[in-house]
Image (tube, rainbow, N blue to C red; front, side, top):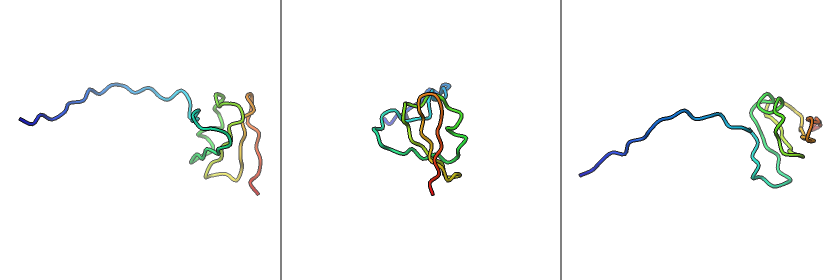
Length: 71
């Protein structure tokens, strides 16, 4: 007899961080929009990010984002 699997659905909490802490330096994380990360303050030090809607690289210093133009 074949039995279909059943699943319990629960509330999935939002991630505590949008940053992938398993990446090793140097890696540039790419986001769709700048707003996905620019307000975050929990990035590991020296995280490098960019977004598809901007022409800047951002580096997290541990206390603020520093912006660099890609050009």
